[in-house]
Length: 407
Image 1 (cartoon, rainbow, N blue to C red):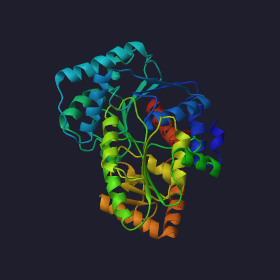
Image 2 (cartoon, helix red, strand yellow; image 1 turned 45 degrees about the vertical axis):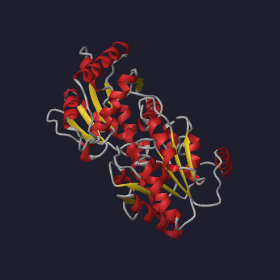
Image 3 (cartoon, one colour; image 1 turned 60 degrees about the horizontal axis):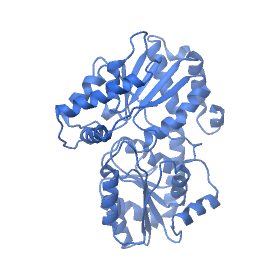
Image 4 (cartoon, helix red, strand yellow; image 1 turned 90 degrees about the horizontal axis):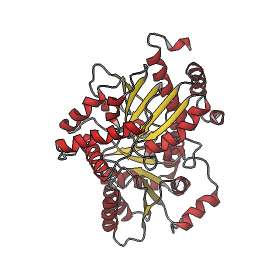
């Protein structure tokens, strides 16, 4: 399977993966998060685990279970870590710990390396098996640069027990003197149904199924229906553009089992869109990867106008398809968009509207930036690079004091 990436991923990444896998052959690598579908983490893991198995790593993926109270709490926690003011009680925090405690009795936590994703399963560190020395890493995929301090303080008492903390963007990293900290950006899989090449017939079939005409430019945003993705702001930008350039807007998203706010935000977006026939709001099943791919390929301009963001991989997905992109200047979006080279970053609906019109009125510039964007993704944001980084961290932690040149 890893051989399929030859000629697509940089050769240096593939060579280093081969060397690292030889050193870690047969070792066990456990990933734990809170959902198997919906959102970037689940998508990355669904593609990464088979590749790890292919190179001889004994990789597993487990998911913690919780009820509505637990996921309502973790959603509030997510929002507060991204700067919202939320109300919490000691009872809530105690229940959060108790749910993780119950999960610890069901899960097999024994592995040579354990990677815990995001706040939901963070307390599992308290149930780390002591029978053998292993590596426990906490992976933060969200923007914690300006958190509600009391929430970060409560979460930190778990995070500081880990050997390693991994963040997506350097400004997200927090001071924890006894924890090794690293930056590893997320990635896309160029061979997945969401990113592989599609035929024109496949694209047309999706267009017809969703009732989207292709007789005018299409502006697209793919994301959860989440207030931090700013779907209302996207509609505002579209309405400004519509005064000058005839176009249509698609807002497409999927539900996630760990996000209880999605339905309410979706209803708000539908109400705000009103009866405009050129606004298409699509709530799709989480496994509609080919459909998302087709929507991106039929679109003329792709937005990720977030006001808070962990990383925003829909930007790299769009760039891989050579589409001109516009993103909010938050989280990991500016790491993907080199402003004026691979796309534009913006701070407002008015700014997004200005850049949309600039693309529509200058198709040659849009084409050139789309081509530059694809090469930038190839060199920085493909799945093989993320596997390379995880294995490198594991190797360096296991063999501290050795130089990578010894590989």
